[in-house]
Image 1 (cartoon, rainbow, N blue to C red):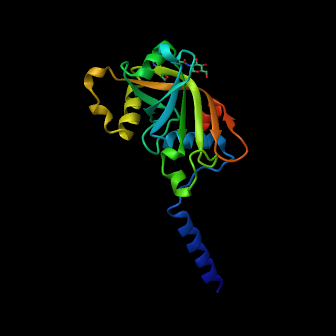
Image 2 (cartoon, helix red, strand yellow):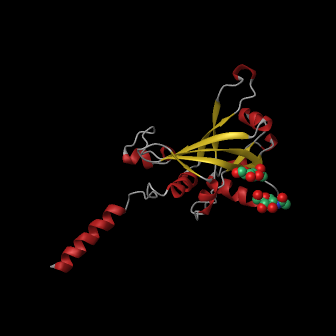
Image 3 (cartoon, helix red, strand yellow):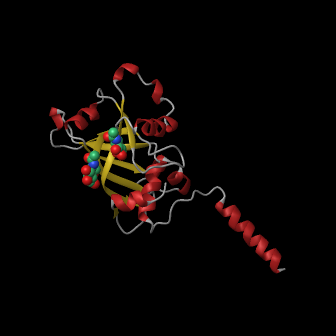
Length: 193
Ligand SMILES: *[C@@H]1O[C@H](CO)[C@@H](O)[C@H](O)[C@H]1NC(C)=O
Ligand SMILES: *[C@@H]1O[C@H](CO)[C@@H](O)[C@H](O)[C@H]1NC(C)=O
């Protein structure tokens, strides 16, 4: 009898885990930040605009991003940029940016019926500077981006695409009720990907 009960309990536990998406516990904020960054294939990214018409006003745009091949995240978001792009004009004048990534970009929030603005629809906001990737790191950046964005190698070859990365200086995480939390880059990079 006991064995049957245990078996039923085990079956229940197994079936309730199967199909559910496992996100890190809400109190492990640095892990949550790494999780969101790794899961994200794209971000919204604010730059400081150079456009005459919006001097001193915010400007955000959408970018493809990858911190590494699936299950091999580095925490460091890589980007593939062209100097022809409007936000890249800003980055060339001032590399300070603020990307935001959300699990609304995955199917987590819709499956859980969390509105994108709900604190339960976990998101991370970063601040930092865009750096060009040097020759020793290019292979890592290329594998990170091209494995997650198979269209990238075919982007117009005369556009001067280059690999870049974000040097993260500030991290904010909203992953539950009770307000936004901060994580230091040290805490963030300590987490194993
Ligand atoms: C290239 O960048 C990596 C990571 O930032 C760094 O560890 C390495 O020393 C750099 N190599 C060169 C040649 O600058
Ligand atoms: C990256 O940011 C850190 C501050 O978090 C700074 O100390 C470091 O010099 C920056 N690295 C580069 C290459 O700009």
